[in-house]
Amino acid sequence: QFTPFKFNKLIAKCNCEERREVVIIAEENPIEPELFLELEEETEGAPASSLYLAPNSCQGRCLEAFDKHHPCHCNAHCPEFGNCCEDFESLCGHEGCSHSRDAINKEVLQSVSEKIYRADTNKVRKEDIVLNSQNCILPSETRDQVDHCPEPLFTYVNKKLFSKLTYTAFINLLNNYLQATGRGEHFTAQELAEQDTFLREIMKTDVMKELYGFLHQQNHYSSEQEFVKERDSSGFEHVFSGEVRKGKVTGFHNWIRFYMQEKEGLVDYYSHIYDGPWDSYPDVLAMQFNWDGYYKEVGSAFIGSSPEFEMVLYSLCFIARPGKVCQLSLGGHPLAIQTYTWNKSTYGNGKKYIATAYVVSSIH
Image (spheres, rainbow, N blue to C red):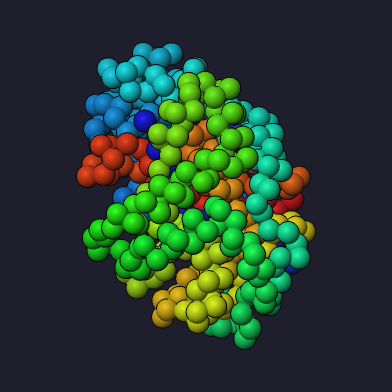
């Protein structure tokens, strides 16, 4: 069973003129590999191949990539080769009508992502934000921890945005989490209610309805009740709020969080290495900053997107391309998100969550 929103990283790429470090990243069996710029690599914990709960079972392994070291398999092609684990059908049968990771092809993903992009009626208008991105540095300079930008990133944000229901529900969650990882967190009844409110509000939005309609058509969910049941906010803290791990900032990939912390004097914007090609919002920015004394070497974020838009894109890619590059299209520009799966035996009864998710952007 797949449950979205357990992320460990977000990656973007840099298009600063004459400052490009190119890495080829392609889907499995690509015909024409595309060039991407890879900037952030925050692998945390064990590699994906060691995160599975049981090598002789498909528990937490549905639709995984083939690994010759496993005694049995749970991928889309194991029925063809007769090497599936015994519980493949019972545990993985609901992952798709054809058990194929490629049942949703690249063109279909690009088409639905454009629909989701257009459906984000809560996104920021161009006049709602004045951004001062200032100095773009080389990727090789990100470890220097030098403040190249004397001014804040956000010059102006229209505060009326935060009266929108999903924005309000999102902001109410931001103070519910601890900065340091590895410390137990106990939520009050009010905080749990705030989580429910946030999930309930985003489920009402056009982007979430677009996602459900698409996945229902693809036979991933038989009813809206099933779809709603599997939404989960467990990765919210890492990706949207940010954490400190081993003296470094991890996650913290949300523009609203950044703006609010910057206004409070807790975030000091240093520089950026990538500014996306979009001339309206949402856009993508990969930046360096200091958060309350801790440095973020590369922190990538959508700028001007609604909270529900980001949740929908990561869910789409995790469901359609778990552990793979998920090539999308937003406003006519290519964008890719890669996810990896994560299992935690002490949480969620072994459900599969997003271990790692990062944004990459084509140099085209």
